[in-house]
Every structure is written in structure tokens, then in C-alpha cells.
Image 1 (cartoon, helix red, strand yellow):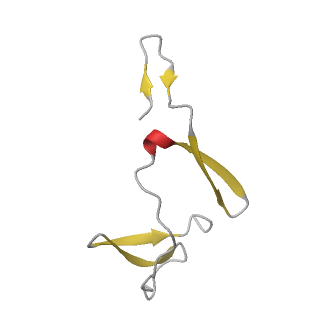
Image 2 (tube, rainbow, N blue to C red):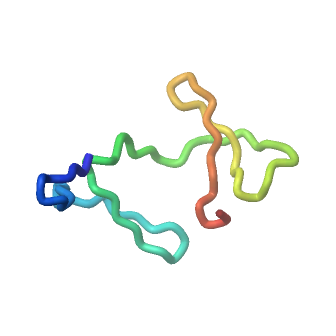
Image 3 (tube, rainbow, N blue to C red):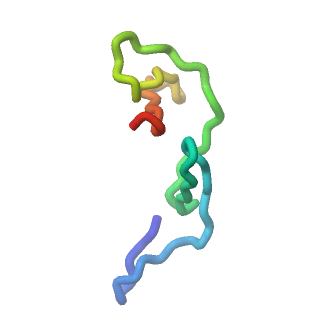
Length: 71
């Protein structure tokens, strides 16, 4: 996690996890990354908004998968 020092500056690890969403390039400090998952089987959600791709089972919990390109 990035933390503020006494001078007010934010400290980071200096290492980024990078990825593309559509044609946009993002970087997140590796300290803030909890887990990286590969594509998973999704269950469609009828009548859901376009941003909702479906539902996935993440270690026994049902999680909504959001399409960041449509958000």
C-alpha cells in the first residue's frame, strides 16, 4: 500500500503491474495488487446492464464481473 511520509509525499514500491483495457494502458503499484486471475467461465445475468459481463465463482463467493471497457 502506498503510504504518506511526514513530508506528505506518497511512498510506493516503484514496481507496477501493467495491463491494457481496450486501447488504454494502466499501471497499478504491485503493493496494491491482491491477485491476478486468468479468464474464467461466467454465468450470464439476464436483463443486466451492458457493463455486467456475468457472474464468476471466486473461491466459493459469487462475484459480479464488470466490463471496464463499457463502464
